Amino acid sequence: MGEYLPPPSSLLILAAYVERELPGVDIEIVDCQADRLDWKGLEKYIESTAPSIILTSGFTTNAYSCVRTCEIAKTINEDITTIVGGIHFSFTAEESLQNYPEIDFIVRGEGEQTVVDLIKTIQNKGKFSDVRGISYRNNDAVVHTPPRPLIENLDTLPYPAYHLVEKHLKQYHFTMMAGRNTRYMILEGARGCNHHCSFCTQWNHWGSRWRTKSAKRIADEIEYLHNTYGGVFLWFADDHMRLGTRGKQLYEELRQKESNKDVMLFFQARIDDIATHPDLMAKLRNVGTYWILCGVETNSEEMLREYKKGIKTQDAYQAMNVLKQNDIFSQAMFVIGGRKDTHKSIERLRQYSTDLTPDIAIYTALTPFPGTIYYETAKKNGWIEDTNYSNYDMAHAIMPTETLTRKEVQEELWRCYRNFYGSLTRGITGVLSKNKLKRTMYQHMAGQFVLEKFRRLI
Image 1: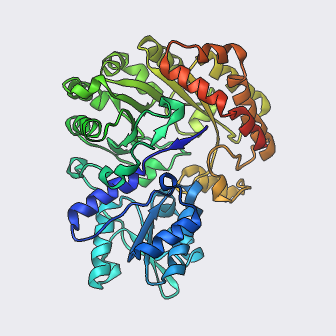
Image 2 (image 1 turned 60 degrees about the vertical axis):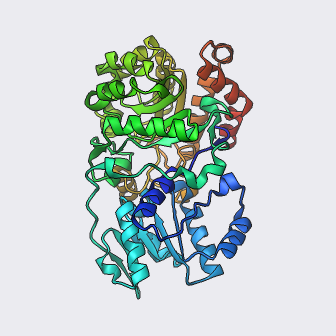
Image 3 (image 1 turned 135 degrees about the vertical axis):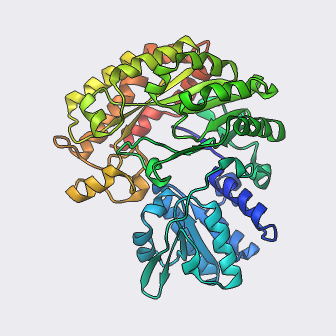
C-alpha cells in the first residue's frame, strides 16, 4: 500500500520493562529500516557492538528475517544468545526450534516478565527449566516450560522506551494515512480480545482474554507521547476497543487533556460496537478520533458464521453511517478466499463494499496464520498450497476455494482493488476531497500505483 515506516513498538514496550527491572543491562534497539541497514550492514553492526544477547520478534510474514538475524549473530559469534518472540514463534515453537538451530530460545506469549527472568537466568547460569513461558533445546529434545500467567494490571507497565529510538522519530510515518511529515507513533491501550474469529491469532495468543489499561493511563500516555516526542498521528494497537466498556471513560479523560486539540487518533473497532454506540462516536471525534478501521469481512452471513465473527451484515451499514455522520474517516476491511467463495460470491462482495461507501476499502486474501482455528482446519484438510511464510501478508493467495484455484483467488483480489480504486469518479472525488485525510490517502494511492502492484501478484 506504499511507503510505511512504523516505530518498533513491541521492542519499545519490552525494552522499557527490561530497563526498569534490570537497570544494569545495556540495551540498544536496532531499527534496520530507519538506519537503512541491509544484511551486510546489520552484520557489521553486530560485529562492532559485540552484544551478548540478541532478541528479535516478528509476524509470520517476516519470520525468516528473524531467523536470518539469529543466523548472522551466530556466524559472528556462536556464544551470542539468540532469543525470538512474538505471535508466530509462540505458535510454531516446536517447528522453529527443530528447523532453525540458530535460535537458542523462544519466548512464548507475553514477553516482559519472561524476558527479564530469562536474562537473569542466563547471567546467573541458572536452570532454564525454571523459567516459565520459554521453549528451548535440551540435547535433541525441545523443551516447553509451563506458560507464564498474564500480567493482570497493564497500568504497571512503563511507557514505551521511545528515547532509545529518538534519533529516528522524524522518520516514522504512515504516509497513506497522514502524510509523509506527520509524526507517527503507536500506542497500546489493551491486549487480547474476547471474541474468537477463526482467522485471527490475537485472541488465542493473549489467552482468549481482553485486558485494558485504565482510561486515565491511556490518556496520560497519549499526552506523554505528544508532549515529550511530538507524536501527532497515534495508532491504537488494540485489537478490540470495546467502546461500551471504556469509550465514555476514555472520552472523559481525553477531554481534560490539552493534547486532544493536536493529536489524530486511529483505532480499530467492531462494526456492531460502533452501531450500538453511535453517541460515543461524536464524543470521541471531539477529542481527536479521526480514523476508524472496521472488520466488515464479507456480505455472506454463512461466511460470517464460518469466520466466527458474531456480527451481521446490517451492522456494517449502520456503522458506516455513524462514522459518516460524525466526520470520522472509515476504513473497511474485507476477506475473500473462504472455502465457499466463487466468482459470483466475490462479485457480490465487491458490490457490497461499494454500496457501503467506506472512505477506504482494504481487501485481503484469507490467510491461514499458525495459531488460528483456520490454520488447523486448513492443515488437516490439505488446503494450504503455499507454505512460504514470506507470502503470508494477506496480499498473496495461499489457498484455493472449493471452486477457485489459488491463481483465480489472486485474480479476484486484484479485481476487488480495480473495482474500488479504478473508478475514475471515486478517484477524482477522493483526490479533491475537502477531508484532508481522504485527500492525502487517494493522492498517495495514485502515486504508489497500487492497482499495478496487485496485478503483478497474479
